[in-house]
Length: 94
Image 1 (cartoon, rainbow, N blue to C red):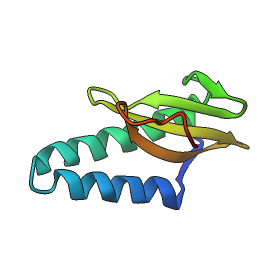
Image 2: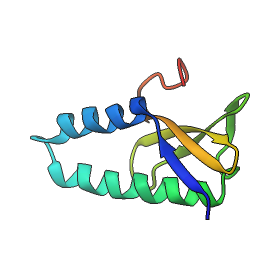
Image 3: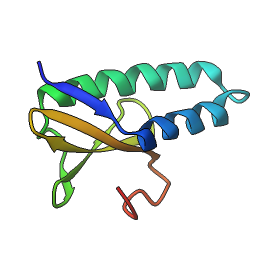
Image 4: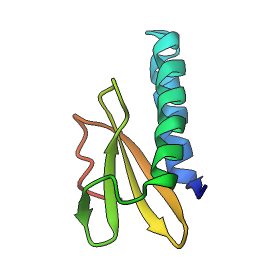
């Protein structure tokens, strides 16, 4: 089994998402967090599953949510770079 690492920016994205949903729908954030962690474990085992969006950077939709994880393959691991809502301009930066 390979490893999945989360950058500080990706971790900060999750905190911002949690802050947004804290009063709106806290249960949604918990589901999103579980699904994002499961998705990163899946990608660690199947790093090329997500389509390449630019050289070395890939994306993966967090199942049953409107969120996208941007990641890259680093050796035998993956590194989650950012977590975006699909409506955001997620192509602007990794």
